[in-house]
Each structure stands twice: as C-alpha cells, then as structure tokens.
Image (tube, rainbow, N blue to C red; front, side, top):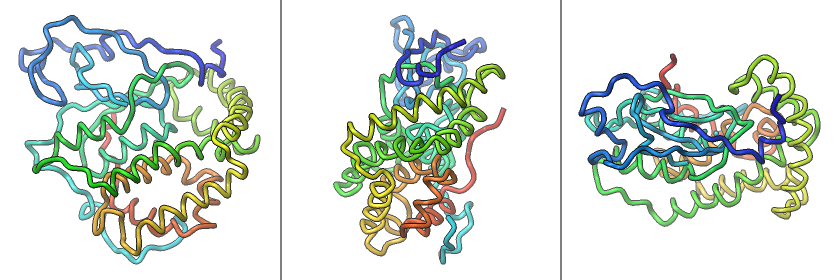
Length: 304
C-alpha cells in the first residue's frame, strides 16, 4: 500500500500515451492546442504532481500542451447562460483533456476558466499520492486565452498584479486553513478520498493517514510563510480582494477577468469546507463569490 505522505514527496511518471489513442488521422496527428505542425521528434514522457493540471488533445499520441481548484444573497440577477462568455465557435479548442485531482486549487483555477468560457473538456483524475510538478496553471490559462481571443491578447497591469497575488500569497493560505485542526483535516481528506482516483483499500488510508500527515505539514507551512493566525490571514486576504473590487461587481468591471477567475478557482474547492464557510461568514467576500458562481455557471466538463 502506498504511503499517503507521498502526497508531498513522491513523483509520478505518466507514460505515453496518457490515454489509449484511437488510430489518428493525419489531421489529428497535427492538431495542437496552440496550433502549428506536429513535431517530428519522438514523444516524450512527462512527470506530474498534484497541483499541476495538464491539458492535451484527446486521443493524441503526444502531450502537446501540459501547463500547469455564499450564504449572502447577491442582488445581481443573471442566469448562467447569460453570464458565460464563450468564444466564437471557430476558436473553441477541440478535445480538451484536463489531468487533475478534484481538490487541487491550481486545477480549479483552470476549470474556472474553462467553465466560464464554456469550453468543453474531459477530466482524467490523477491519483494525488504521486507526482512532481513541472509546470503551472497560469501558463495554461494564458495559452488558452490567446487561443480563444478574437483580439490581441493583452493582460492589464492590475489584472496581472492580482493574478500574481493569487499564486504568491492566496494559495499559501489554503493548506494551513483546511488542515488547521484534526477535524478539518479529516473533513478535507474525506472530500479528497471521495473524489480522487483511489481504490477502495486506499480510500480509508488516504483519509486518516493523509489527514494526519497534512495536519503536521500545515504547521510547517505556517512557519515557512510566516503565518501566525491562519484564519485571520485568510479573512484579511478575503477583505483585501473585496477592497480591490472598489465597488465593482468584478475586478474586470461588468464581467470577470482572469484575476477574478483565478481567485474564484482557488477558493472554490474550500468554499463549502469549514474554512470556506468561516471565510464567507466573517468577511465581505460572499456577494462577489455568489456573482462569480452565477457568472461561471454550470461546468462545461464532458462527463464520460
């Protein structure tokens, strides 16, 4: 049986092909998420860890792209269909596959982007007991944004600043909060065990041994990132983001921009855990979060 401590230490080598490919047509062999001819060099294997989502064309022999998670009522009455911002049909990437695990905040950043733009995607659940991160979620969002943009893809200074804030500050507050106590660690790993790629035997071990391990890891992360009170730090971050909105519905104005989607994506996996419930009850972020839920709408994920 695999040791749950490898959640943070072991590497997973995903051999090619990642999915059993059907016999490809010449056109399919050349299809890339970023466009352009296929490489003549032989395909390479790639290694991943939890927190590093990968996107690849379904059925391709290589991995051409691998880059890389409200109780108050909102006054904004809008249906999900009206709120989504799908690109023109000719720009929608075809056969997108997301390699992820359900509770990962970085994976959820990518999913929030795909859902908001109504880009269909399939999910391959990666066992988070293994893996090594080589790439990040912000890069994959940038590449997809360029792919679906009808104009020149430009990220504004304010938007870029808050995306960095998400990656460099907000994400580091999650583990100390969701594993803050043994009961919260068990709650988090119960969610991970139910949604992760585990056998029946592993599920019990992951929940209890994994929760115990990550409870200890969270204390080290608090020290590493100089966090004295994890809940206070989470509340402060939520209020900092709310103030940045400056009275607007979204940082992007009347509709979400990439920073909105990044914050929402990172907070989505914790929203209905104890840490997320506390955050909404003790800060002003709830109305913005509700607007984001309305805007992003139903997942565009293609269920098998």
